[in-house]
Amino acid sequence: MDPQIRYVTSADGTRIAMCELGSGQPLVIVSNFYSTIELLREIPQAVENLDRLASQRKVVLYDVRGAGYSSQVVRDFSLDANVSDLAAVVDSLGDADVDVLAAGPATQVGATYAVRHPDKMRKLILDSPTWLGSNYAASGSLEALLPLAASNWSLYLQCLALANFGWTETGRKVAERHITEAKRAVWRESTNETQRVDMTAVYPQITCPTFVLVPEGSSGWRALFGRLIPATNIMEVAAAIPGAQVAKTRPTHALMLSGSWDSYLATIVRFLDEGGEPPKSVEVPSGTAIIFFADIVDSTGLTERLGDAAFREKARDLDTALRKIIRDNGGTPIEGKLLGDGVLATFASASHAIGAALACGKAGEDGGLPLHLGLHAGDVIREDNNVFGGAVNVAARISGLSAAGEVLVSDTVRSLARTSAGVSFEDRGEQALKGVGEAVRVWAVVLREPQDGPEGG
Image (cartoon, rainbow, N blue to C red; front, top):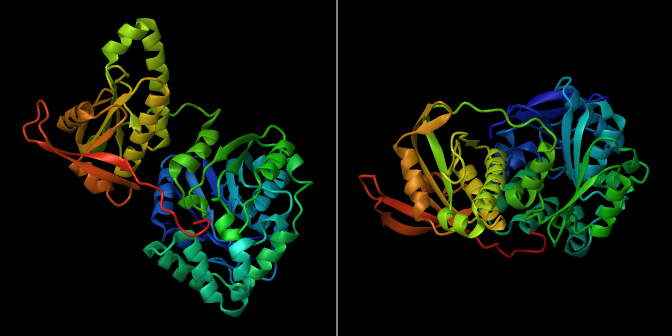
């Protein structure tokens, strides 16, 4: 993630910093005080998630007025002013309809923009919307910290970073970034304005397809604002929006772009892709790629137990699901390979490939057709909408070594993804693969156990 910053001018003359990542259907992420463009570059998981989003669409970020790269000398922090900032960002993108994603207090801006500019909207996603801005007021441990914000702003920001990231290198970097970019006066004025807003009359006027996310557990916005919006409150808002869809999520981090892809952002991507044109066939270039191979465990035995017709129906359904998972994770399924013969796909990113493999394993388990899953990296040759080469054979052989639902990777893939995939690896040693001259060291992907941290972290 190396965004090129450019500026747009809001209705009152305020200069707003923005950047675009990727290409395609625009997804505009509504800014908030705590999450600037530069801050997101300090958080590895946020960088990973943004790169993943940008592999299939144009992701648009901007800095809220008074923070980050945007104008620092600002007097007006009202809802109207913030909606005007979002309008300036969207207008700079041209005539295309946009998708808008907003979480916490930023939902006030996203929803109000959708009502005022319905002609610009394609889809709207609201995470934790509530009727009254006062519901976002600090409570609990963060409320106790508010006097510190008045007396020692830098220490308050350090404590906030600790609540969100724990005693980590990322937490230290985030604290330093907040101290550099977050101004106490901006925080005070924008917080006061947020808490004065009443959205009761706005939500029923939304006309575009809307997706409302209801966080479960103690994550979500609690770490930033100290208060978890009750699910019943969010559901009431959803009921007031004509035709809104609702999904419960289990966010793993207070900053939405820093959370787990599978438990949060994947849900959003599925909504954005609903009703769209089917993904276009992508030309797979020759050259180095991450190769993913999946095959049904004991397909012969399953066919005998289920019957040929029933097995093929289940296999076709799973094949469709796996190809969607692969595309959602930035991969390219090879159309020449069908489940039963094995699903083959290529990826540009090892971490994306591992995420897809894990999701495919779960889909196979849920569908009653457990899978062998393997990954390797190497050169491929493309011919007639298929890929060939020794690296493809290695991926298939590694897949065949895996237990049902287990993801095995070569040492090459492990080296590429060791610090970015958010998983651990268990050494399975050197393995002799049929048709491969040299033994290959193989590793099993192991999901990391969630780390308990401070409240809301």
